[in-house]
Image (cartoon, rainbow, N blue to C red; front, side, top):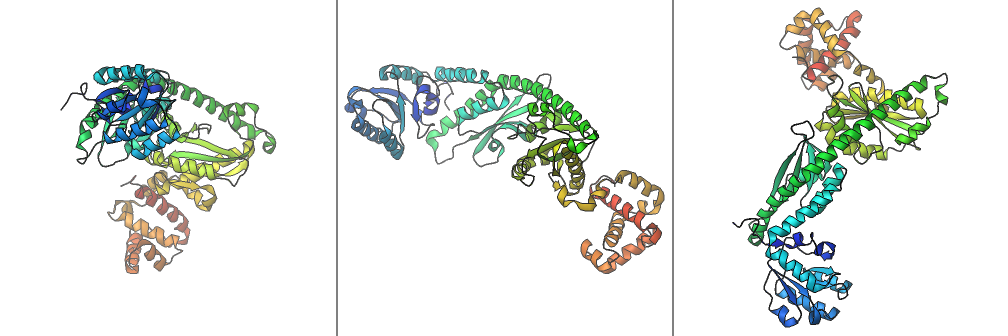
Length: 510
């Protein structure tokens, strides 16, 4: 195998450095190798070109549209990599002909002789040309001030190789296609360390590999892997700087939004909350709280106190992707956001945001509650309370679940039950039941019967067991102290059965 420094340079690589970086490229196959450069002044010289060469037309070979058409046909017959011609000669018909022939055509504004000399030097010393390309890319990366800008440069430079910045399993920036499993694709990963941290993220590139049907380009494919990794490493300093700035900007923005929301929360407590107007400083944050506001509550599936700032940073980055003006305020064990609009019934953009956030919600094990649309500041606070209640109900459906308050109804009251405390009461009052190995089946059966208003047939259908099985379980539950059919205890035991079943179904209690 050839060393990467001696492998022929490709047409795509040449197109990214001067003198062709400022040209107008029409590349049929950027991966075509370029093994030599020919300055063709006559058609006779053009006929003597060998395959995989790049020809620069000059003098007789570039006198008009007819000559360029003939040159393109000859280049196609000689299996050349590309034809370079002055803009004064090329036209729309020439570009169309090149596309039909699947021949690369590059239109230049500089002197053809100077261009040919520079290209000849680059083709004869591919390692130097690649170093020049890296230097140019380093300049472009250094100009970027944001993470998405850095990823944009990489994806434009690598074209058919999608690149993404990933934290955990979540794509923070770049193309999510980099994580898609596909045949004949190799993943290149480079660790990105944030300041003061061992590893903050990974740069991942999905590099297509050539199959056995195309052995002629297998060498260039192996170089591509090395070059892609080199470019990813080159981008790390710019990414680290952008990451640090992003964290600083995000922390500042989060502090402003948190303080502003706390101020808004106090306004509706005025004597006439319905008359409260949105403060003028809300527009500085991009908030439109004077319109119809529909709140969204993002909550962990299993609350465990206030989340760390790193998690808030990731949630904010995922939630605000494509909706950078939407707020995100940390609140308790979750996060509040909202959508404002003139039409309370228009939820198109909100549904789109929820759909785009679903993968992140599943990855971070979050559920989502959505409140109703209410006008003004007081309406926003009401919608926030509704969204939080809906999020509690959504926990029954697992990670990524979305619950709209409009569809919750009175069952929302069950979401606020202190299930853990109720389970502790069961340990004290139903000691025999809690010690039984089949306690989960017994409690689940009692709950199904109570939910069905005492109907054994409905309960058996809900549980998927025979009616006699339901009767046997009820008898055993009664023997162990779960006397569900006594009127004075029915309500308390119904609530207790619901709480225990909820905890056991979530594997929180064995």
